[in-house]
Image (cartoon, rainbow, N blue to C red; front, side, top):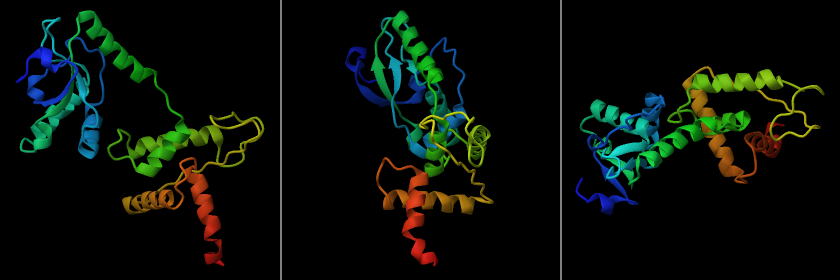
Length: 222
């Protein structure tokens, strides 16, 4: 590294992935291929956290972002002349062994402890598409199928479970949209994006935007 360790601490720089080392005892096994897909689609939108190592004796050790580093290395190997994989954004810290371990553990644990509102996740994936999200089209199908198993394609009935965001009096109707090919799916995503432009209220769901559009264009179908 060009700078002294004391100068690096608290800063964010870009360095060659070859200069960094993965954490020596990282217990997490992540999906490097999914991280690679995200990097190719979205780029690196947050730096990894690296320990300078003056207190541990292990210089340039990644504490948070080990799988991002592995993904960068794989992409650099696949495309050795692509400059975007030659440098990785790093935020530098200088902590002892105990703190380094805590950072690694909380980074892994907070990821595992997080959850999703499945219906909201499906809506987001339908709006943005699955490319570069870590989710596949098959994952989206599974999520939608799981929601339908809970809700059912029609009136849920009085004994059905109350889903997040529902009140006891709500009746939810949910459908799974199945596309025959990529062209149909792309057309759907473009329609959803168009709806967001036409009905920019951030509080509206996709269903509400579609309903408003149906109402607004009712006269065109007479």
